[in-house]
Length: 281
Image 1: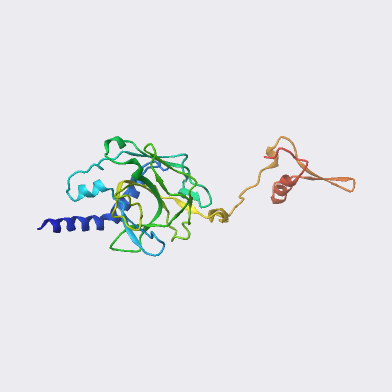
Image 2 (image 1 turned 60 degrees about the vertical axis):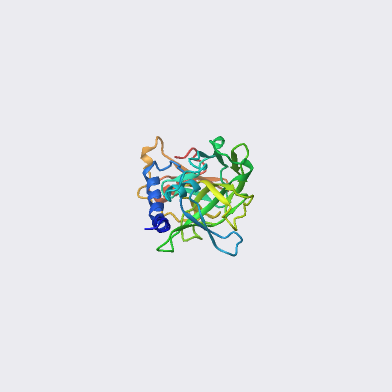
């Protein structure tokens, strides 16, 4: 078998394993504590529209990992140490998991390239980009992440090995995207030949890319806030359990009338509407 054939075979194997790897990553997240936020490897293709007209595909697999998978020699971009921190955590709910409102500003996200001194790279050519993505599950044979956009400045050049994302908001909701949860993707790029235009990625190298846990995004008027909850009252309180008898007093045209609080629905209403009874249970 020729060397080119071997490379194509490896590439095709990687391509068809993307979906399996993605769901394996989600299972890995589920194995952690429910509210434990973890950034995972992001070795997938991203479907995006650089000019909002044409469709392109960007391989988010870091450059050094592609070389490893193809059996190539290590490069100076190997083994990056990237740290991603958030100003505060995304909200976690036992039923929804990680969740956020579209109208809320995302917590500040800071990216640090810890071993920058190990590279022979120019810092002014390294930038971080943040994507909001969903899983493209429509295709059966291929798998990729789909860029759904984000509001705010999502491309920041590193300064002193650090880049921070501020004042970002989600641009859409899970409801408008087949009910799918979103992921944040943070990628570090290095410009080759002073080219940072995403309409052509041949002059860009990805140093590292990370994938967040899934996030359910609501609209401002949250669907879950509109869910009608059925309340059933199976038993009313027994007034005999209280220290003293309770009465509801009414004053009308100078006359005062009293009504005993009874152990039924009327008594329940009278108790909570009696202005003369304070410090209610």
